[in-house]
Length: 443
Image (cartoon, rainbow, N blue to C red):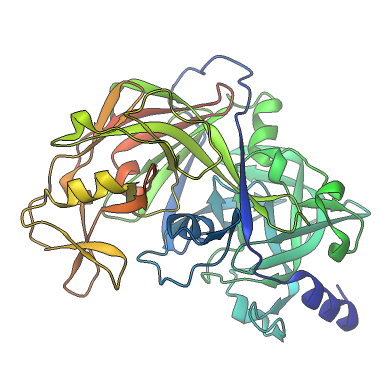
């Protein structure tokens, strides 16, 4: 563990709520789309409030940008998103961990770690970080010398520790030589259940660095490695894809690795090439912090046939070839569906009675007993209609919010409101997202 002098120096040097900038790239496909068969490797998950992705998407939606740098937004968000918790095994001991499509590292908090206050940068009791049970390195763990684990998020949350090799088991698949982070110093807003995180994003944003002094970490000293999902398919255990089916009404769902989960859906599948949008610390002191999958999508509702988009999204993503489509982020950590401004206002006007934009809340509110309009999302030549149950969301205080909110001029975000209605496949090998409509279920 760090001695007290080094610990305080790290707090002062490393902890900051920096702004971030955005970059993008289109990963090259390395194989044809994989067959979509039911996988034996299925994870059940539960949802908890709070989301890493919202730390980045909220400033983008609120346009809190100066000279290409996005900062923390002063606006109180209408949602805080959600995370998904599932079981992961390190060695022979199992933990609950957040499974995240936008992060790349797999890490756990170590027994005896030091917690600190994100705002004051002062050490605080371990319990105040609200981790679940902590990890004591097992006999199968081996430390990688002269490397450190280091990541800071947009809101100042930070993790520092060591890097090592461990046997990691997820969905019944064991990777025996998986590089992992073991957190020894944390500024974290935990949930009291999860002990760490399982990242499914690309190697380019892993958080291992050369040397043992995190204050000297930089993009130049980053040591990218294969995340656990990448090792699974590179070792031939599964096809290079994973899929997500979020349930309605019971805060649960399933993720399958190498195929699809055993849920009812309606073929055919719609195919959409993806781009990756990456959030990078403004100082360039470390590598990318978070990644989003982005596709091109259109919107279907009464009067939508003549709607065109200018494509001035302000995001560094390639413009759609079709001007009836907009750049659209797919994010399981977002609760609502955020549509381009003209779409959001038109659809909300079609509730009976109409939804109203409440400026003080920055959101459309709707009568809880209103009739929802017909609304769909067009992807790859198919239209995926949203169940009316997902278009009116209770706030728990007798008021309701519309499931369709305003994202700005020319981009959108497909969150839970959309994802409850589809089977979503992330085909990394084909560099594409693939969707099928879920059975039109109620609960």
